[in-house]
Amino acid sequence: MMNRYVNARTAGVLLLSLLLLLLTGCARSPVLLESTKASLTPQTELTEVPFFAQTEYQCGPATLAMVLNHEGVEASLDELIPQVFLPGRDGSVQPEMLATVRRYERLAIPIRGTMDALLTHLEAGNPVVVMQNLALPAFPMWHYAVAIGYDLPDETLLLRSGEIERHR
Image (cartoon, rainbow, N blue to C red; front, top):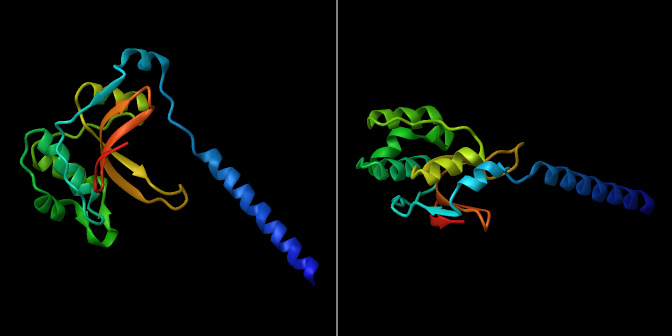
């Protein structure tokens, strides 16, 4: 009887180890082309992008408040929440985000989902709204943040995210 528990425990440990090994294979650092790396300044930070701390599930309105105000549009977090937040979804979705930007007579320009495109836009002085999965691919937890800079030697991005004004 005891032997069966030992075998089950061993199988469980092996299964957990295999699962962890597989999950680490899913996580990899984004690739930056050498040509892009050579053309960029080593560090850029858009310090003039205002910070709006988000409350629970309000990352969409907070990111829009940051980028719209950076573009000279006076938009408060309180007026953006009812425009983009969907209570049934506990968050904001892209169609509402894009429509709200248009209501403020601005144009959201999707960029390629590469590190090269992101860093090039940041160096040009454009903050970028990014959508991150803060969990596992099988159980996503989506979150909007605003990329405001990078540090190539440290291999870090600078974000305005959640309640953190300068997240590295």
